[in-house]
Length: 272
Length: 293
Image 1: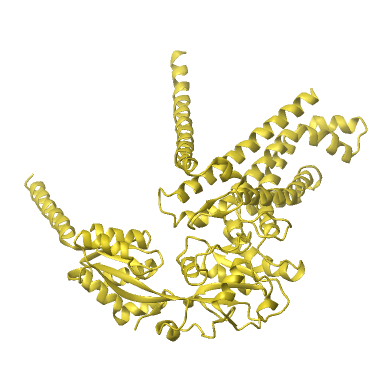
Image 2: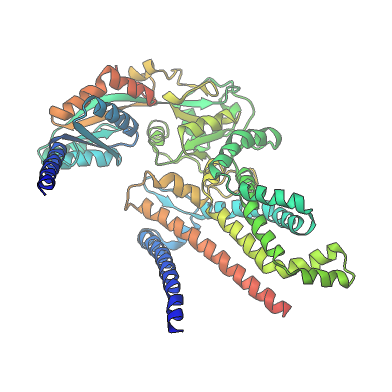
C-alpha cells in the first residue's frame, strides 16, 4: 500500500511537471499565404530543432486571412505574398495595431518553352496576348509556324496569382489554355510539347525546358532582386508591432543564413 | 428450440446494426453534400450553373458555368467506355468460354491484379510517355487531351469489367451449353445466342460499375486530360472533367465561399450522374427481361 501511494505521488508530480512544462513553453502561431507556407513550415521545423522549448504552429489560410488574423490578434506572424493593403492598414490602426513587414524572400516566375523553340524573348504584352488567345501562332512572335499551346496553373495557386497580376493585368486567361496542378507538372508538360509555353517558379527551372526573357531582361535572382525583372514579387512576414521575444527570434532565424538557405531550397530567391 | 432461435438472432442483429450504420453514413454524406451545395443556388441560377459556358470562379466578377466541365466528364467517360467495354466483354468471353484451363488460371489473376494499378502511376505514364507520343504521331497540338485520358481510363476499367463479366458468364449453368450443343449449335452460336443473352444482366452490371468508376476517376484526368474548360470538338482537344476541377481547386478555396459551394455542387452533380446511370441500367434490364418473357 505504501509503495502504491509513493508511486501515485511520484506519478502525479511527474504529470504536473510535464503538463506545466507544456503550458509554460512558448508558443508561436503563424498563419497566412499558402505561397509562403513552404518557407514557414520548413523554417518552423528547423527553428523548433534549435529551440526545443518553443512550439511553432504554421497554417496557410491565404494572405488576406493571415493579415486579418494578425489584426485580430489570433496569430503572431502573418505570412503574405503581397504587401499589406491600405484598407487593412486602416483596420489595424483602428484596432490599435501596427503590422510591421519583413521581406523574407523573392518569388519570380519564368515563362518557359520547349528547348527546341527558337523564341528567346517576349514582351509582357505578347505574353498576355498569348494567354488571352489573341496570339495563336508562334510565327506571330518570331517562331516557327506552329499553333501555340498555352499552359497555365490552377486558378487557386499562388503561382497563378502572380501571373494574373503581373502579366494578365487581371484579364481572363483563355479557356483553351491547358491547366496543370503543379510546377513539376508544368515542367513535364512543356518539356513534352514543342509548341507549349508555360510559367514556373524560378526554383523549378531545369534543362528540360528553356526560360525566355521578358522584355529583354532575363529572369535571374539578380534581376529579380534589383526589381528590373517584371514578373517577380516580395514575400513577407508581418508581425504585430516591432517583434519581441519568440516572434523576434523566429524572424531573425528566417533572415539568418540558415533561414535563407531554406528559402532557396523551397524554390524562392533569398533576399540577402 | 427457443434457445436455438435466439442463437440465430444474435448474428442477425449484429449484421443488421452494422448495415444500418453503413447506410446512415452514406445518408449523412449525401446530406452533407446537399447542404454544402445548396447555398450556390442563392448566388447563381441553376440554369447558369448547368449551361453556362464560362468557368472563372476566382475572378472578379466570377462565372460558375459548369457545362464544359459536365461535357468533359461525360466525353472522357464515353470515350473510355467505347475503348474498353467491347474489349473487356470479348476478353471475358475468351477467358470463360474459349481459353484452355491452364491459361485461364494465369490470365484471371493477372487481370485482377491490373485492377489494383494506382491511377497516379497511370496518369504519370500518360504525361511522360503517351503525351509526347501523341504530339509526334497523331499531330495533336496538346498531348494532354481527351484521348489520352480516355485511353488510360479504359485501361483502368478493363480489369473491373472483365473480371465481373467473366464471373457472370461462368455462373451460367453448364446444362444450358450442353443443351445448345445437343441441338447441333456451333460454339459461336452457343456463345452469342445462348450464353451471352443469359449472362446479360450480370454483364450490364459489370459495365455499369466500370463506367461509374470512370466518371468518378480523378487522378488520371487531373494529370492527363489537359484541364482546359472547353467543349471538345475532337479527340485531341484538352478537357476538364468535374472531378479534376474539384481536386485542383478545393484545397485552396476559402471554406464557405461561393466557389467552395460551387465545387460541392459539382460533387453533387457527379453523384446525380452516377445515380442517373444506375436508374437507366435498371430500366434497360427490366425492359430486356420483359422482352424475353
